Image (cartoon, rainbow, N blue to C red; front, side):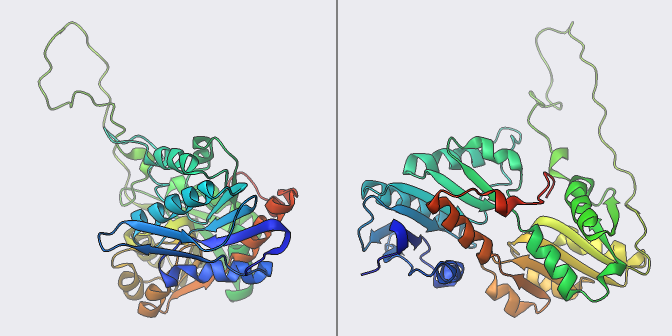
Length: 356
């Protein structure tokens, strides 16, 4: 029988074996066995979870990494959390290194804030606490009515820069768009390096998208009261693409929180090469690397892409040797230990700035 120390259990909610690697590393660091459970899909694609041991009165930690099939992973997490809740678990803590739907945290046209919906669903399913890493927007924590610990991967990525990038003192930290400048500035200040920002028409940040306030659409004939004349909002026009900062003869290190569709990163690498950068690295916390990302990276001017193991990407690494992985299981294991023992989490956030 799997008896963990101090009355807590650690489970994996993934049905895919490739997604349980991070859970195995975390339990090895904690010195406990992974909880006995079975997560699988029925023939009609329904998710079924069977917990194979008692969890009554225990602190339960559910580790859920998010593969390409995001919706299945979300259902696995919800069903397992509810199964543990109905099995009388004392506390149910979700360890979700990459929080799905985090890019859908703002209103877009007549859409919805899906991230808020997911937060409500997790609370309803029985979760009482969440451990995550580098939320796309820190304000997402306000969507939850229970504690959220938003850990940072920047110490691990900065350590990689210092130990694995030769002559990193000749590097410059690059933000691929003005919206990423604060994160890049934080890296630059910690490493005592210069900062460059790419700005121009080739990059469209999320804040530039329509937010749905054009109602009715401008193209539709307006009927009704014609005496109301509102000021006309001029359309945005971005300047030609440019690099603010000197990258000539330097190593360029592009930093961001997520690397998914890589077209923007590839375009940024080409611009940096034109401006004289002789080596280009891309560093991000979450390596989703969807669609044709491995092929595009392999064919691009990017020399290396460094991501953490918050998201499984072993298949992508086989397709592209430029992709490297940094292990963050250490900080996730320590967060689990501290939460269970009722210890302060401040140590895990030491020297962490708001912009990290």
